[in-house]
Length: 340
Image (cartoon, rainbow, N blue to C red; front, side, top):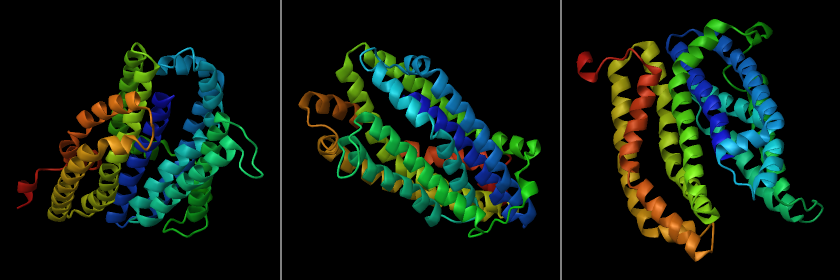
């Protein structure tokens, strides 16, 4: 179900990027009322897409999993997992958009902690619900799905309390919750490139899984391990992009062009150096890293070869992602020499 999950993430990320860019611009323009209006729009957006994903997961699980490349020997298990996890997708979408909203106001630590809270809950509940530790029932693989849903609800609930409880800079009123299609259109105008990129990734993973399935379950498992490992390697890139986005948006709204380009150059140079060092370390210790996930020597060997090829491009991907982030937020931005 990885491609379907990526599609869910893509819509949440796209809406989040658009929200982040829009509020950071409004802060740069000193238009606080407009930021509160944008804040209110994340609720109807999350509800709309969340209900679509629930409907799809509950009504068409077999069709979705077939498109995603699931084989017949795992279909029954995958259907149970997808229908359970599908019930938590509205909370996942809201959490992604809301943490981006907070980053747009200049906060970085709290959104990270809110997201980590869900991850920690998932890590704790997984073994308890799968193996039935102590008072917890032994549920097997459905326990992992239930743990994921609880983690989504936890992260969304904490973030919601922080925003609605007036702990953040936002001060919404009831009228801000009414869908404003002009603002929603602007959010998705900025976020559309992120959605397209993520959706293309979902399509690629679907094709990738179908191809790997032809080589057997072991190849499919190796591909899944490689993807999981690459997710760890991409975290610094996503973190740098999320940190750069509100800075670029604020500078764009305030007309601080030299400062904007200085931030882009520093972030791009820093992430390139970091990823260069990380690539060397990962190439050397790749077998040990994959060994965390599996002890099967044949599976380990296949996954290591795939991972070493993919991570070789990280040093190029990092600065490219930051450049894409910059132009998504500032589509009419002129080159740096124009401002000198």
